[in-house]
Length: 139
Image 1: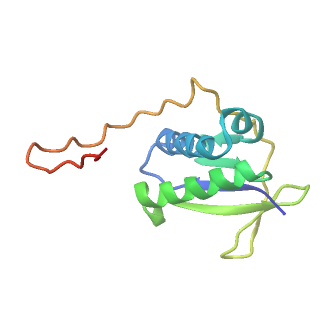
Image 2: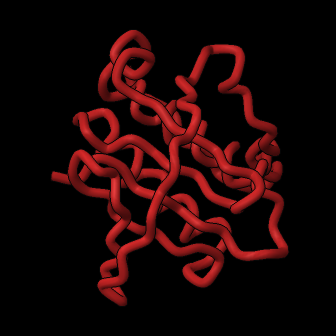
């Protein structure tokens, strides 16, 4: 069973940008599971020195957060901006699907997202120009 996913990010992009994107994935999971369940079952661990994030995947919340986060990172930063490894078993070994190599993972601090932490900086969506037709509801 997959216990977690470990994401390693390549140079050139600030790790905080990836962490902010992860917080958006937690917010998306709240839409499915609610805030309380995400706070109880969702967690991640940053490693700024290794440019890595480990995201729990042992619960349904964790599985959704990882799926959404991976999709967001691909769209926002590109496929080549990161690698992801599934971590299995009690010993917490990281098994890379591409090379079948085993990467040792050390103990890491676990972070549970809090309401105040989930305010990543994002720009507002573009406003419609005056010439665009807007839909109206007929009652």
